[in-house]
Amino acid sequence: MWRLIPREVRFFDQFEQQSANIKKAARLLHELIHDFADARAKAYAITTVEHDGDQITHNIVKQLNTTFITPLDREDIYALATRLDDVLDYIEASAERLVVYRVKAPTSACRAMADVIIRITDVTDSAIKCLRTLDPGYHVHIMEVNRLENEADALLRDSLVALFEEQADPIEVIKWKEIYETLEVVTDRCEDVANVIEGIILKMA
Amino acid sequence: MWRLIPREVRFFDQFEQQSANIKKAARLLHELIHDFADARAKAYAITTVEHDGDQITHNIVKQLNTTFITPLDREDIYALATRLDDVLDYIEASAERLVVYRVKAPTSACRAMADVIIRITDVTDSAIKCLRTLDPGYHVHIMEVNRLENEADALLRDSLVALFEEQADPIEVIKWKEIYETLEVVTDRCEDVANVIEGIILKMA
Amino acid sequence: MWRLIPREVRFFDQFEQQSANIKKAARLLHELIHDFADARAKAYAITTVEHDGDQITHNIVKQLNTTFITPLDREDIYALATRLDDVLDYIEASAERLVVYRVKAPTSACRAMADVIIRITDVTDSAIKCLRTLDPGYHVHIMEVNRLENEADALLRDSLVALFEEQADPIEVIKWKEIYETLEVVTDRCEDVANVIEGIILKMA
Image 1 (cartoon, each protein chain N blue to C red):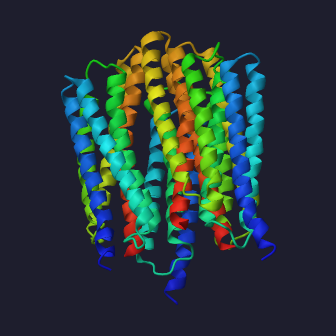
Image 2 (cartoon, chains in turn red, purple, brown):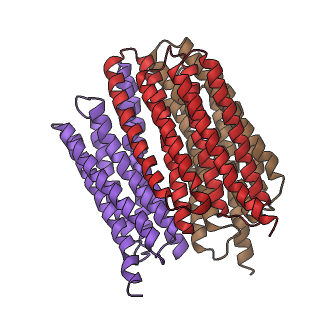
């Protein structure tokens, strides 16, 4: 028993650590988008955070391999680890698109989206912290994640309307359409994390 | 026992109710595509149906939360609820794209796709109605869903060939390519629903 | 018992058969991309392999239906069968895009991607062969699948940078962007297969 308890607790530690990593990447993305000087270096900093995240994901999977009793179903630990990894991947992909497509500067629509990403990753973090104690307060956070995902959806729609109205250069349309869509996917993946958390708490409660 | 039985039955009621909702949205999309007058109002009607659907999804998840004995595995109820939600989301997204991209009128390729969507949502509905009794007749419906998804796939391919051959304006190519692809995804999501149904019946039989 | 053992073994046979099918399709795609003469006929050969694969997937699902004792969890057999199917679908989709978009000839970026696809489908095959005996050697193969998926990711990024720098015709940008992305998705789907295999072995070990 003595050995099992600390091991069990470690899964929650690592989910919270990964979530802190996501919050960090979201802040770096926000900074990159609000000040595009040294874009390449700032995007590289996000890639570094994403690599740290990969390491956490691998540690979680390795622990799954060597822990006999887990505090959650193995499948749920696996699902949550991979979904959190996806959030980080799309934050990095958003930064990468901005750099790879050599845009001059992020638009105001990007800035609005980066603001939503800060908020949704913060609320997702609050939901993750409910897992350890199956805190029924999780439900408020899940609802807020859903609300913010809808907000990002509406932002994407408005950005595309404006893009097609104002941008005559099709190459620019292709680039910005994909940048906006990738930013929006970050919020979709946060909603996926929220759904896994809800599923776990429904099952355990 | 008295309280549990009606609760159990309610899940099937709600899946069938959601499926009826999907059929309704498919018909509204068909109408929008075949007669584009008042497009914005017609798209808004679809959004309303989609919001009703969100409510049903939330009710199902809430019931999962408060029902001790469920007629199906909790995970399967959750999966089916979210997959049905996806079908509705993409029907709405298709309508939205037509309006947001300010197209003059849907093409004949859109009309052909809307016809397939009516048929595939009808057959998906027949498959859902098999769940309650684990009716082995489900298999014919699943096969038909797969066939219709292949038909939509072929339609998409032909539409893209024609689009790239006939449309010289790249902005128009971007818009129509995405409209056709979004319509096709509706049939992919119906196939996902069919796969969940098949999985459930395989497990229960 | 006598009847059950051969039935159990058959699942592994069929996964390995499907994987051999994927290797075959990957080689046909490689050939198509390295020599684009008779492109339509070569793409058609891939479609034939894909249809054979659909048949294997259906056989696996049908066997699930009629086998009482399975060597793996039903859900895992289902997941692995559908994920393998996805790999084949994207190999076919890649070939189809090249033909449907009437490109003059695949680029060097396509050739590099086809090389990675040969290697990643070979390594995925090695991982699948570990399932039967739960061979711990699976882990090396999974790591290599992940490495090759990262390689494909970097290739995609470099291809897009070059495409946007060198190609002035937006219609061509649309076509090639999608071709490169579809080729890259083949490697994403191999990674999904690897993840299912890892999940199964973690659970069984």
